[in-house]
Length: 201
Image (cartoon, rainbow, N blue to C red; front, side, top):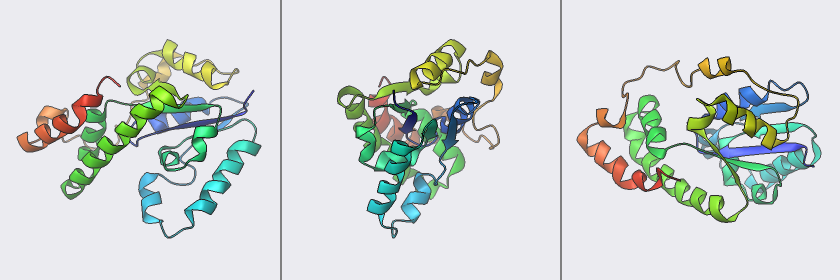
């Protein structure tokens, strides 16, 4: 049995919610992005990424009852050899809408292209690389589904009650755009043209 858990995906996909839920286990320690998120990684490209990857791999290989829900792990190759790996997926249009509510408009085009690029990668991982898939919409609304994911990870001392679903995701931010149709016509069409193909991933 593998005694570590690796969960990755794209940012704005419920990583903090899931990490906090799993970390309620008394046996396991599950962290949310303990070494920074994907944006931090991009700002630190001067670091020797090979050595950094090796250090992360060692943690997963040698630390028992350890888990991470960490979007930036998607950048590294060792994750494909990990036996207990999960891919956290959210409707990419909803991810982009979350970006629009948090980031300056000057960054929207970058994120739109980046989400599209990564979801093409995720589609391949989902089908061919032995990833188990976790769906954002289900873990945040369906307690039976969330508990089934917990058991699937190998955490056996934790069963959550439905009140945890009241911990809403991202409510500490002002919501300027409540749905994709609230964006300008230009951005709505750009987002739909690039991301609608992944809605059923």
